[in-house]
Length: 252
Image 1 (cartoon, rainbow, N blue to C red):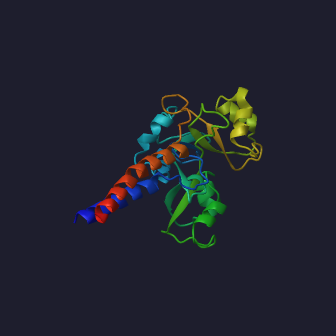
Image 2 (cartoon, helix red, strand yellow; image 1 turned 90 degrees about the vertical axis):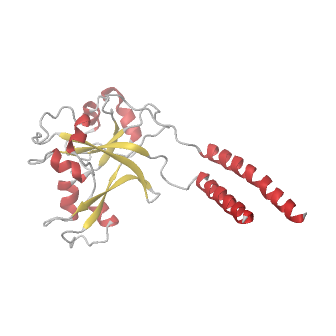
């Protein structure tokens, strides 16, 4: 009985050790909060937008949109800031996977452009869902992935909260920078979006933004691999003497 308990204890420690090992992932970090800029079209309000992003109560969006006076009547052409966690999708990239139930008349193109206001693309929907582009069944639940960012310490440690911003025709680096009060730091936005063409009028870019307290969040410190290895070594350092003692007792 004692031997079984000891064996179970060792297996538990080894299981914990496994979780302390650094995992292989293309995602440099994840974060519990990211924002998305939702472009409002006619007849759209917070009651419509909130469930698209898994927000249970549209009032929860108010702290991120203090300029909205009437949640049921929002000026067409304005941007609503939605929030979500920024996760590692399939170990490959940062994003959040939302669930959407298809209604009559929906296609991947209309879902991407009209329902999710270009925060995703038809190509992304086709890639991450099994239904063919020409036949997305009514009532089916599909995954809608919105890309996001948690910052880059190689660019700056001052910013840890970012908004996914879909570019519109006519916009450019200067206009986007001005909208987020980065007119004097256009190069910063470009460094956060290497290779992005701010003049393209399509696609998304990631912009440092403020939280509901009107403050920029600094980049959070990621639990580093060195610390994981140290903790793993400490754990196994405690296991080995017990194994040696057990073997010694058996030989007596």
